Structure formats: structure tokens, C-alpha cells
Length: 256
Ligand SMILES: Nc1ncnc2c1ncn2[C@@H]1O[C@H](COP(=O)(O)OP(=O)(O)OP(=O)(O)O)[C@@H](O)[C@H]1O
Image (cartoon, rainbow, N blue to C red; front, top):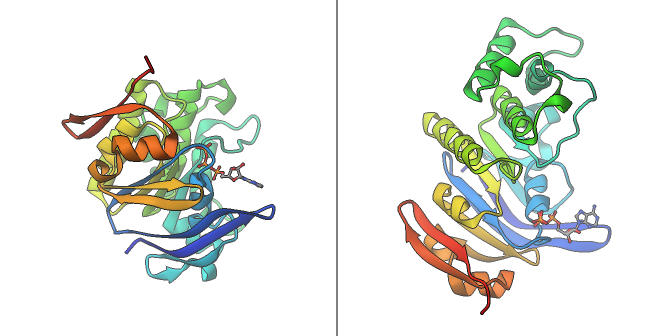
């Protein structure tokens, strides 16, 4: 198992944000957590990434997350968040090279293997021509691809994607998700993601988990989770769910 989450709770500022969540992600699987705003999706992902304290147990590749060193964790898990902090003035190449930090000795220099991993990540995300550009000069979508390139360069086998395509146009959304899917097929790579676009989420996930009020409200295949009833109950949304080639498609319907 890549990720085993057992009875996990997270408190933030005295409020229970995630409650009694259990879920597993098998090696090579793609699991997407959905749920309305404030459901606790990012907080759960941050707990898996070791960024917030939690109750319960999280195991990553059979090792308790609680005892992993930062360096070991960084070799196993890469996280792409919606809006990472970017050092001002940093160019794309140097930012992606930060992904190699877990492999570089303190005060050491990057090796040829580190530079090769960076080159490969830039090329896979079609970013080679941006290597010398400052991050703040890129468009939102280009920057989002740079964040993913850093995660790829990290060489981790678990990718945590928190709304990885929010800033992307529909073409780049598909391109990035298809690339992640290809990387997963090339393996070994496991994906745990959060996404708001339910149709796209359903097309790419093997399984989905619906979080509502910090708890798991439903879990299963996209067809089992993306139902008109569940989406009405937990999002207060009027939708029609139709069959697509790669999973159910969720279409919002306005009230008459
Ligand atoms: N540091 C914090 N202190 C207190 N409450 C917090 C903190 N961080 C998040 N929260 C609250 O926890 C709840 C869950 O937040 P989280 O970001 O995990 O939700 P989400 O499901 O990812 O939402 P969204 O879809 O809007 O991104 C929200 O109500 C949020 O206000």
C-alpha cells in the first residue's frame, strides 16, 4: 500500500477540521478527494504530506509517517499545492532544482544526475524554453507547470496534487493530467489528488473519496461517488450526471 490513513483527525485553531478519516491508496493507483469548499480536502492532503499535525495513523509505503525524517519523506512524497511560496526573483531552472534538495548533501553541490533530472522534468512539461525566466514573469498556467516540474524532479513515488489544474485553461488541464497519468503508467507513481472539476476528476481517478464536513461521506469508483443524489446532498448542487467515455460527466443545471 502506498498510503494507509487510519482514523485520522486534524484540529486547526481548536476546530476539528478532519474527523475519523480512513482511506488507502494502493501502489500505482490514482485516488481523488472531492468535496465542497471547506470540507477539509487540503488539510487531509497536508496531513499526508507531513505539513500539519494529526491524530491517528498515516503510513507511507509501510512506514509510519510520524517517524519519517524530512529528507526521507521528501524522497517519497512530492506535493503540488495551489499557491506555493516562490522565492522572489528565482528563475525556473533554480526553482525546479529545489526539487533535488533531498538528494544534495548540506552545503554540497548538485550532481550531474540532479541536473539531468531537472532537464528531464523541464522537457516533459514543455518548459525548457522558460528555464532562464523568472517565475513571476510566467502566466498562471505556466507557473503551475513549473510547480509540477519541481515535483517530478524530486523523483518521489507518491504525488500529492492539491487542485493542480485550477489556474490552467482546459487544454493545459488535459495536458497536465494526461502527463501525470502517463508518468503513473510508466511508474512507479501513486497519485492522491484533490479537484473541484468533477467530470475531469472522474475521468482520471481510479477511485474517489467524497469528503464533507471533514468526514468521508462516500468512497468508491467515480460512477459510485458522482451521483446526482450525493452531489445534491453534499454540495447543494443541481446537476445531471451523464455517461462519458471515461467516466460520468457532471453537468450543472440551472433552476427553472
Ligand atoms: N490554519 C487554520 N486555522 C483554522 N481553520 C483553518 C485553518 N486552515 C484551514 N482552516 C479551515 O478548515 C476548513 C477546511 O479547509 P481546507 O482548506 O482543508 O478545505 P478544502 O476542502 O480544501 O476547501 P476548498 O475546496 O475551499 O479549497 C475550512 O473551514 C478552513 O477555513
